[in-house]
Figure (cartoon, rainbow, N blue to C red):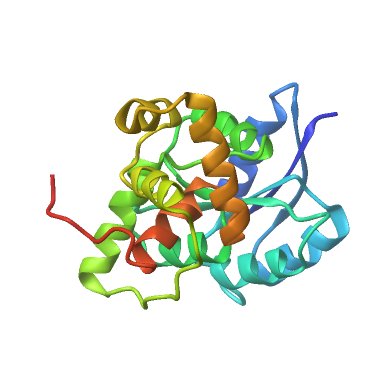
Length: 220
Protein backbone atom coordinates (compact mmCIF):
# COMPACT_ATOMS: atom_id res chain seq x y z
CA UNK A 1 0.00 0.00 0.00
CA UNK A 2 1.35 3.47 -0.83
CA UNK A 3 2.09 5.93 1.95
CA UNK A 4 -0.79 8.41 2.12
CA UNK A 5 0.28 12.05 2.40
CA UNK A 6 -1.61 15.26 3.18
CA UNK A 7 0.10 18.49 2.04
CA UNK A 8 -0.70 21.64 4.04
CA UNK A 9 0.55 25.07 2.96
CA UNK A 10 -1.14 28.41 2.41
CA UNK A 11 0.73 28.95 -0.87
CA UNK A 12 -1.02 27.14 -3.70
CA UNK A 13 2.14 26.85 -5.80
CA UNK A 14 4.02 25.23 -2.92
CA UNK A 15 1.20 22.75 -2.32
CA UNK A 16 0.98 21.87 -5.99
CA UNK A 17 4.74 21.51 -6.35
CA UNK A 18 5.15 19.24 -3.34
CA UNK A 19 2.12 17.19 -4.33
CA UNK A 20 3.43 16.65 -7.86
CA UNK A 21 6.84 15.60 -6.58
CA UNK A 22 5.40 13.12 -4.10
CA UNK A 23 2.80 11.69 -6.47
CA UNK A 24 5.59 10.91 -8.91
CA UNK A 25 6.96 8.37 -6.41
CA UNK A 26 5.50 4.86 -6.84
CA UNK A 27 5.21 4.28 -3.09
CA UNK A 28 3.70 7.66 -2.18
CA UNK A 29 0.19 9.03 -2.74
CA UNK A 30 -1.04 12.56 -1.99
CA UNK A 31 -4.59 12.07 -0.76
CA UNK A 32 -5.37 15.74 -0.10
CA UNK A 33 -4.23 19.35 0.13
CA UNK A 34 -5.13 22.05 2.65
CA UNK A 35 -4.52 25.79 2.65
CA UNK A 36 -4.66 26.40 6.40
CA UNK A 37 -4.48 24.57 9.70
CA UNK A 38 -8.24 24.40 10.27
CA UNK A 39 -8.76 22.69 6.94
CA UNK A 40 -5.86 20.36 7.75
CA UNK A 41 -7.54 19.23 10.97
CA UNK A 42 -10.73 18.37 9.08
CA UNK A 43 -8.96 16.56 6.26
CA UNK A 44 -6.73 14.63 8.64
CA UNK A 45 -9.84 13.22 10.32
CA UNK A 46 -11.56 12.42 7.01
CA UNK A 47 -8.64 11.13 4.95
CA UNK A 48 -6.51 9.54 7.68
CA UNK A 49 -3.14 10.17 6.02
CA UNK A 50 -0.02 8.39 7.18
CA UNK A 51 2.10 11.54 6.95
CA UNK A 52 1.24 15.25 6.96
CA UNK A 53 3.53 17.94 5.54
CA UNK A 54 2.50 20.92 7.68
CA UNK A 55 3.49 24.53 7.00
CA UNK A 56 4.38 26.47 10.15
CA UNK A 57 2.84 29.85 9.41
CA UNK A 58 -0.65 29.96 7.89
CA UNK A 59 -3.82 32.05 8.22
CA UNK A 60 -6.94 30.94 10.14
CA UNK A 61 -4.96 28.36 12.16
CA UNK A 62 -1.17 27.99 12.17
CA UNK A 63 0.67 24.72 11.79
CA UNK A 64 1.48 24.42 15.48
CA UNK A 65 -2.14 24.66 16.58
CA UNK A 66 -3.19 22.24 13.86
CA UNK A 67 -0.48 19.77 14.90
CA UNK A 68 -1.66 19.86 18.51
CA UNK A 69 -5.27 19.26 17.53
CA UNK A 70 -4.50 16.44 15.14
CA UNK A 71 -2.20 14.59 17.53
CA UNK A 72 -4.56 15.14 20.47
CA UNK A 73 -6.92 12.65 18.85
CA UNK A 74 -4.45 9.92 19.75
CA UNK A 75 -4.03 6.47 18.21
CA UNK A 76 -4.86 4.35 16.32
CA UNK A 77 -5.12 6.71 13.36
CA UNK A 78 -2.53 9.23 14.46
CA UNK A 79 -0.47 10.52 11.52
CA UNK A 80 3.18 11.49 11.55
CA UNK A 81 3.70 15.20 11.03
CA UNK A 82 6.61 16.93 9.31
CA UNK A 83 6.78 20.68 9.83
CA UNK A 84 7.63 22.75 6.76
CA UNK A 85 9.60 25.89 7.46
CA UNK A 86 11.80 28.44 5.71
CA UNK A 87 14.15 28.77 8.68
CA UNK A 88 15.58 25.83 10.60
CA UNK A 89 15.86 27.81 13.85
CA UNK A 90 12.21 28.65 14.26
CA UNK A 91 10.49 28.93 17.65
CA UNK A 92 7.43 27.27 16.15
CA UNK A 93 9.49 24.24 15.18
CA UNK A 94 10.68 23.76 18.75
CA UNK A 95 7.11 23.99 20.04
CA UNK A 96 5.96 21.57 17.34
CA UNK A 97 8.53 18.99 18.45
CA UNK A 98 7.15 19.29 21.97
CA UNK A 99 3.65 18.79 20.58
CA UNK A 100 4.69 15.54 18.92
CA UNK A 101 5.81 16.43 15.41
CA UNK A 102 8.35 13.98 14.02
CA UNK A 103 10.68 16.66 12.72
CA UNK A 104 10.96 19.52 10.29
CA UNK A 105 11.93 20.00 6.69
CA UNK A 106 13.19 23.15 5.01
CA UNK A 107 11.03 24.28 2.10
CA UNK A 108 14.03 24.46 -0.20
CA UNK A 109 14.84 20.77 0.34
CA UNK A 110 15.47 18.70 -2.77
CA UNK A 111 12.80 16.37 -4.21
CA UNK A 112 14.82 13.36 -3.02
CA UNK A 113 15.04 14.80 0.51
CA UNK A 114 11.30 15.44 0.51
CA UNK A 115 10.40 11.90 -0.53
CA UNK A 116 12.96 10.39 1.83
CA UNK A 117 11.57 12.43 4.74
CA UNK A 118 8.07 11.08 4.16
CA UNK A 119 9.34 7.51 4.05
CA UNK A 120 11.41 7.94 7.22
CA UNK A 121 8.58 9.24 9.40
CA UNK A 122 6.07 6.79 7.89
CA UNK A 123 8.36 4.01 9.09
CA UNK A 124 8.11 5.37 12.63
CA UNK A 125 11.47 7.09 12.84
CA UNK A 126 12.24 10.69 13.72
CA UNK A 127 13.07 12.77 10.70
CA UNK A 128 15.55 15.00 12.49
CA UNK A 129 18.98 13.76 13.23
CA UNK A 130 19.32 14.12 17.01
CA UNK A 131 22.29 16.43 16.42
CA UNK A 132 20.04 18.85 14.51
CA UNK A 133 17.39 18.67 17.22
CA UNK A 134 20.08 19.33 19.81
CA UNK A 135 21.24 22.47 18.00
CA UNK A 136 17.64 23.65 17.66
CA UNK A 137 16.89 23.15 21.36
CA UNK A 138 20.18 24.71 22.49
CA UNK A 139 19.70 27.79 20.36
CA UNK A 140 16.10 28.15 21.51
CA UNK A 141 17.10 27.71 25.16
CA UNK A 142 19.67 30.49 24.89
CA UNK A 143 17.03 32.94 23.72
CA UNK A 144 14.11 31.73 25.79
CA UNK A 145 14.96 29.30 28.61
CA UNK A 146 12.79 26.19 28.56
CA UNK A 147 10.35 25.58 31.40
CA UNK A 148 11.72 22.71 33.49
CA UNK A 149 9.58 19.61 33.75
CA UNK A 150 9.49 16.99 36.48
CA UNK A 151 11.66 14.11 35.27
CA UNK A 152 10.21 10.61 35.12
CA UNK A 153 12.19 7.92 36.92
CA UNK A 154 14.78 6.27 34.70
CA UNK A 155 17.44 3.81 35.71
CA UNK A 156 21.01 5.18 35.89
CA UNK A 157 21.88 3.33 32.67
CA UNK A 158 18.78 4.66 30.88
CA UNK A 159 19.75 8.16 31.99
CA UNK A 160 23.24 7.62 30.57
CA UNK A 161 21.76 6.50 27.26
CA UNK A 162 19.33 9.44 27.16
CA UNK A 163 22.21 11.83 27.75
CA UNK A 164 24.04 10.37 24.75
CA UNK A 165 20.91 10.55 22.60
CA UNK A 166 20.68 14.23 23.51
CA UNK A 167 24.28 14.67 22.38
CA UNK A 168 23.16 13.53 18.94
CA UNK A 169 24.78 10.08 18.96
CA UNK A 170 23.43 7.09 17.06
CA UNK A 171 22.84 3.73 18.73
CA UNK A 172 26.15 2.47 17.37
CA UNK A 173 28.02 5.49 18.71
CA UNK A 174 26.30 5.20 22.09
CA UNK A 175 27.27 1.53 22.26
CA UNK A 176 30.91 2.43 21.69
CA UNK A 177 30.77 5.32 24.17
CA UNK A 178 29.18 3.28 26.98
CA UNK A 179 30.80 -0.07 26.07
CA UNK A 180 27.48 -1.80 25.44
CA UNK A 181 26.09 -4.03 22.73
CA UNK A 182 24.20 -2.06 20.07
CA UNK A 183 21.10 -4.21 20.65
CA UNK A 184 21.27 -3.35 24.36
CA UNK A 185 21.33 0.36 23.52
CA UNK A 186 18.36 -0.13 21.20
CA UNK A 187 16.45 -1.77 24.04
CA UNK A 188 17.33 1.06 26.42
CA UNK A 189 16.15 3.67 23.91
CA UNK A 190 12.88 1.79 23.44
CA UNK A 191 12.38 1.63 27.22
CA UNK A 192 13.12 5.35 27.55
CA UNK A 193 10.57 6.30 24.90
CA UNK A 194 7.97 4.05 26.52
CA UNK A 195 8.56 5.32 30.06
CA UNK A 196 8.50 8.95 28.99
CA UNK A 197 5.59 8.48 26.56
CA UNK A 198 7.62 9.98 23.72
CA UNK A 199 7.10 9.32 20.03
CA UNK A 200 10.72 9.32 18.87
CA UNK A 201 14.31 10.38 19.52
CA UNK A 202 13.63 13.98 18.52
CA UNK A 203 11.21 14.33 21.41
CA UNK A 204 13.72 12.55 23.67
CA UNK A 205 16.25 15.31 23.00
CA UNK A 206 13.69 17.97 23.92
CA UNK A 207 12.82 16.05 27.10
CA UNK A 208 16.48 15.70 28.08
CA UNK A 209 16.95 19.46 28.05
CA UNK A 210 13.70 20.25 29.83
CA UNK A 211 14.30 17.66 32.55
CA UNK A 212 17.84 18.92 33.12
CA UNK A 213 19.50 15.69 31.99
CA UNK A 214 21.64 17.88 29.77
CA UNK A 215 22.02 21.65 29.56
CA UNK A 216 22.85 23.97 26.67
CA UNK A 217 26.59 24.08 26.15
CA UNK A 218 28.92 26.41 24.25
CA UNK A 219 28.57 26.77 20.50
CA UNK A 220 30.77 24.50 18.40
